[in-house]
Length: 388
Image (cartoon, rainbow, N blue to C red):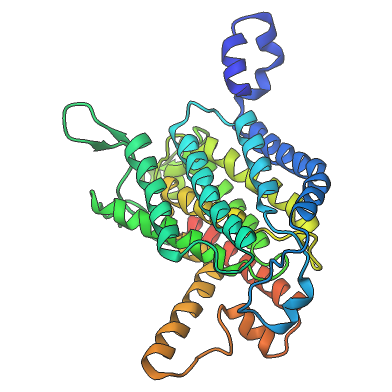
């Protein structure tokens, strides 16, 4: 929004005082700070309203360890706090003319709506079942298709034409060596990434602070990746071989061997807002939590991360970035398949964090160790840039 204001005023005297809005680096930091400040300011009042509105309702799932029952009375729908921070930071400091930013916002809002329906049904019916899984999947798929075919397609000349790159970027391998083009099959692959990430974050959200920190760490990695893929900044590199080598300016994405993403720097503003909003939420969600994220937050954040992975051409490397979420989702799949086929459980309880709880590990230790694993995976993902 402020970028549009600058574009309107840039030719006048006022434009000189808003010149800093030209720079994505400033807007990335500003998006982070604004989301954080807004979250901290509205957090106490919002949580108190949620507590009063949900008085007498238990937001603790029935299929959780007994130790969770002491958390009864903690309000849910805290993801609303995160969403407000994300939208304030992004709407203020991202260039809203960027198609990828609009897609990221639409997907986040759509998945937040899906999560809100689930949370609302749990509260209104006073049970932990909520929205049936198949209906969640229908809504998630619907918002994905609206985003892709509504904002990422060109219908000029008859047949629809995708406006984004359908080639895959392979981790640790430069795009000049491995850059397979999936064509229209990419839409199905991207759907798997987005919906899978959304539901994986939802499964991970079971302990105080467990889901939000890995989300922020993943968003930080995407800030780096999106900025590198979308900036026009050039860095020094050598061209030629032997004595003929000379120093030239090379775009960052070319130097790193990654795909160029139009609007990538604007997408970095969105990711920075996720981090700021996430920190403000963690202030209230740290053990013992004053508020739960709820599906309105976990489905939205997972959808946002999956969408950014798709738009920034980091679909495959997102399996590393989102490693904690992936392992949690796999633990549930393994548990279900094993029990249905053999009648035996691989884990004491799924998702994986509940297995560790049942094994006697404290909640705080589980959460911190998952955070450490997320940091390690983030390092591996960033290292893949240089190794390309």
